[in-house]
Length: 275
Image (tube, rainbow, N blue to C red; front, side, top):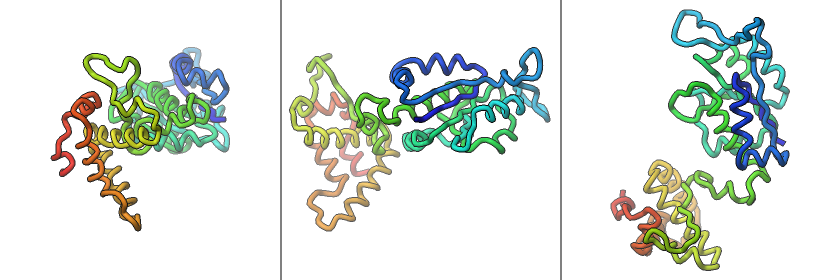
């Protein structure tokens, strides 16, 4: 079972947010465990001080090394991976979340003020992770994003075992649009293929629509996906189908104008495929 220990000055933020939704149900079902700990427990004065001015001056206060170190030592063991939430870290991705879900124990350090003493990073942190190129007031929101993304990869957390594999980014593509009742709404109708019972046909259709959505919204991801598909295609001894891009273009050409509109693909043109 995956256990996540979060070191934070505001444990209530972690505990309250983790009690809702899919993550909350996973905790109740003992599919994973999340605990929070505060360095104030090891503060040396009656005010429970956990920060001080940085040497050399500068804006903001820096979290004291000693209380933070003692908190890490309290929860860390030989199989722990210690993560520091930092805008300087590797940006969280689907692949990273899947890798972290395979760990036995994660310790996530949430900085506050101007950050934490570099000596703690040098001696205890295995990896720095960011959730984007911007700065937050503290690491708690980032930690919650990591916890939520990682928990979805833990077996049993999602209702269907394949749910995580069908989400955006799972195969390098964005997820296709989804629809529910009624069939007709706001002047648009659900694509006919989704109303039939041919699951193989629907799976192939969804995969191609995902590729088209990725081409429209994230050309960078589409390019990486296309390169992989081209490698697979070139390795085939008998090429029974067209090249991946040509096949996708043919699929797009065969989509009705109504389906293109409801899928958000009406802005695509022949030039997008040629480019």
